[in-house]
Image 1 (cartoon, rainbow, N blue to C red):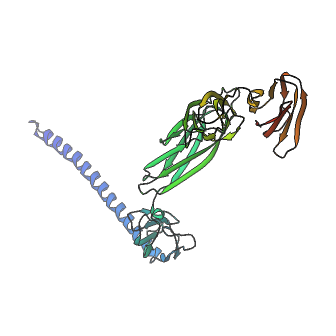
Image 2: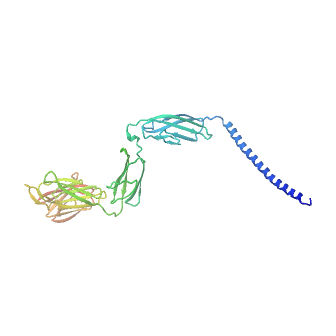
Length: 394
């Protein structure tokens, strides 16, 4: 070692150089290993391709399934050989495609379209084929996409229901008819029924050219102790043709199952919301209307109408069989109030005697809970003759 310290200084520099050289050596080894790995992978791929051999996968045929297809709803079949397909791709030629196993498509316009199919196996072998298909529908609605994809109901309570639907994008008009006179134009809506009964619900949708799709089902509302909500909301009267003929029209808060009319002149019967009646004589008549809904809830409205025609008899009609028997539409019983001694007979529509009895003057309650529902005729016999009236048992 030199006394001036220079030898020591050179050795320190040599040591640093050797340390740096080790690092260069390690980096060189890693670089070489990476190249060998990449070379091994490439060699393996080459050997694998040599082992696989040429691709055998072939799309032999593509054709229209005429038995399953109609004018624009087309189903296609195909034949494959030389391998197992792992991927499918079908282009229908109108901007739509799928990767499905069983190709089918609904075309929305007439014309000739090129259907192209491409298949591929797990080794990457591919093949393809194209055919031309012609769509020629005479009915424009056949080409419409209009359709109800789903329609469901959900009961929130015994009389409240949710209605929801999924429909095609080209739907322009949507309407729910809940079967009780109420409707909705919302795809998702709720509805509360006012009375028990079976309701026919209909959903109808339309596109811009009135092509439509519909769905129908029934909803049963059966709530215990549900209050009745049947109401006659308006009554209109007018004269038509001549002084003797009157027209009556009523409206109710929801549809009527039946309407019973009593015109006050001894004539009565089932009718519609609008009825026309001819009065032979002038006079004051008491008209009564009974409107029933599907749950047998009833609303009654009575009013007086004056018929005042020249050259006819005039009277006030206040005592008749209408006042003797109540109600015209009954369930558990009927009440007969006679001004004198008499008798009655209740006949069904076949003329079969159902009930009969001798009655004294006064009011009588006749039990009817044991007879079947239907239309009946009751006749009252007194010293003044006999009078007849039609009744309905609910």
